[in-house]
Length: 225
Image 1: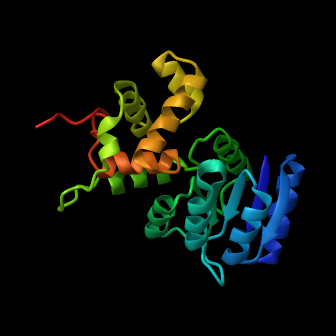
Image 2: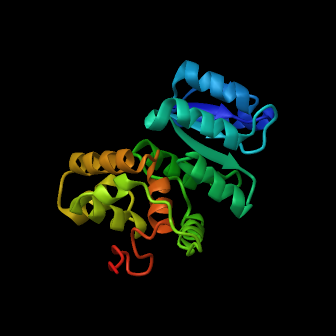
């Protein structure tokens, strides 16, 4: 795995760099601010960017949006932050982040989530995942602006969507539940992301709940009126 670190605190960057390399992870660069994070990401094309939220020049959210707009899902951005503000979490996922990790997380939990990111899984602790489900399941008073492509999901793609909302996000677990190969799961996930114009699975779950594509309680497509 090739990783880029973006953080404005030199001591934190040095410590994280050493920790990652001790695990055999290749650190391809370090950025001191959001603008440099975008430039180095475009230059080195890492697999994962570990992005701080509060940085000078360009904050982590703006940098994430810029990276995702330019490179799509080819580079996965994970927020690594001290901010426990729910609004930051929700905005990070909307901006295209693949996950949200607190800096005080135990190292073993951190590396477990990071390994999941390499398989396309969102880097979210169970408590943060519950917050996302609660937030994006809230009913909206205005009529939902649903992309027409969302109505063209196949039956199998809807099944994948239901499982994602239920919290089943790894390729292996999805394949076991659907009784298909992991390559087939990847194929369906690519189609869902393309049709919904989204960057990652965390955004898919948020979109499905926000637009009532899946019942958050029953974990199934809502009954048609």
